[in-house]
Image (cartoon, rainbow, N blue to C red; front, side, top):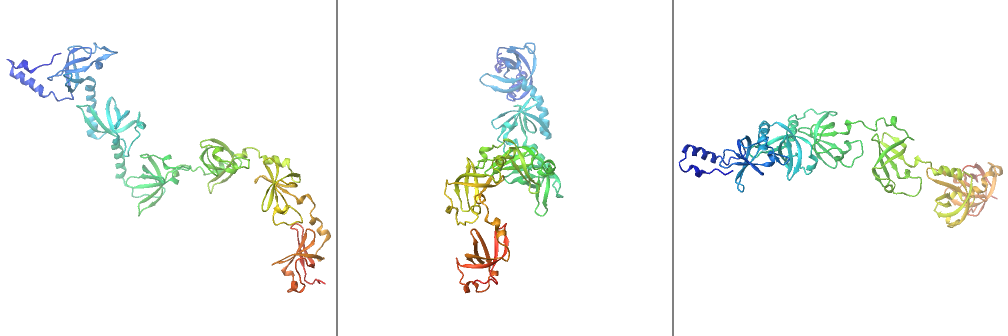
Length: 536
C-alpha cells in the first residue's frame, strides 16, 4: 500500500482538510497508543493497516496466521481492528503495530491501578535474563530486576524459576508495554510492619515471631521487629550441626523462644530447638543397654564414629567397639559418613547426654571361644615374643599372645628385670591363669606349674616358734630374714630393740634368731620379732 503524501494537498485541496492531516502528522510520533485501524491489504509477510497517521502500520503475518496460513475468517481487507502502535521503522517505512500488545494494554490498566494503589500482585517466574527475572502477570510480561528480588544480594536466579511470588509494581509504561516489579518492597513492608510494633514487654519463655537477619559461624541473628535477638548455634538444634545454615536461611520467618532478656542492654538470647521435643527426654523409656538400634553415621573422628539414631539421639561408637581385632584400625576406612548401621547400646547417660554404642557386640566375641580352647589351668607352650620391664608376652598361636607378670615367674627367685631370666624366641611352658575378655588378654603363670612353698608353711611353722635364718636385706623399716629357700620373714623396726643391730654386729648374711609373731599364707608374709630372743 502506497504511503500518503502531503503533496497531493498542495494544489487546490481544502485547507481545513489539510490542517486535519497536518494534525495527524504531528501525532505521528506518539507511539505506544491503541488505535482503531482499518485493514488495507494482506500479503505473505504483513497485514497493512491504516491507523490514522502519516504512515500506515504493519502487523507481522505470524500474529494473524494459523499453522502458517492466513486466518481469513479472522481478518479480511476492510476490517476494523484494534492495534498497538509501536515505533516507526525507517528501513521498512511503516509503523510497527501489534494486535497482541493491544490486548495487553487493557491488562496494563489493572496493573497500573495496582501500582498507584501499592497493592500486592502475584506473578510466576517464567525465565531468567541478564540482570533479573522475567515475570508472567497473567499474560503480561514484566521484569523483576536482580536488585529487587530480595533485601539481600541474590545470585542464584535459578532457585526462583517456576515459583509464584508476591510482588509490587514499581512502574508501568503503557506506550512501550514495559512493567517493572519488585519483591524486595514486599519484604521491606513486612519488616516495616514488624518494626512498627516494637516489643516492650519481653519475658523469658515468650514465643515470638521473627525474620532471620544474619547468619554467622556462631549463631543466627533474628529481627523481632525493632529489636534483634541471637540464637547461639547450640540452641538451634538438638542434633549435632557444623554451621547454623544447616538449620535456617536468610529471610526465613521463624518462631523463637526467649531464653534470656537483658532489659538494660536490650539483648535477647533466643532458642529455636526449645520449640521442639528434646529427643533425650524419656530416653530410658525408649532404649536400654543391650538394645539393637539403627542410625546414620554423621561424623567420623580418629577415636570413633558418631551415629544419629532414628529418634534423633546421637551416640558414639568408640574405636575399641568397632571390631574384636586387637590391631588398631582407622575408623574412616571401616565406616563412611552417611552409612546406615546397626549397633548395640552399651550404656546410656541421660544427664550427660552420652550414648555408647558398639558394632562388635553384634557378633560373638572370639574370646568366648578361647575360654573353651584354653580353660583356666591349661598348660600351654609358646615362644617368648616381647620382654617388658614388668613381664613378658608369649606367642601361643598366630595373632594370639599370653602375658606373664613378673611376680608369676617364680615362687622363690627374685629378679630386677625379666631379661635376667628370659631370651626372645625362647620356648617356655606356662599355665593359663585368667582370660580377660574386656582387655582381650590371656594371663599366664610359670610358678603355678610347681607347688608353692607356702602351701605347707603352717604345717612347718606356727606363731611363737623361734626360727633361725640369714639376713637377706636391711632396710629403713626393718630386717628381711631368709627362713628357707623362697621363704622370707620381716622383723619390723618396732620389733627390734635399740642398738640391737650394732650390739650383735648384724649385716647381710648374718645368722639371726627370731620369733614368729604372724603368718599370712594369702599374702605370703611372715612377721618376726627379736624382742626377748637371745642371739647366743
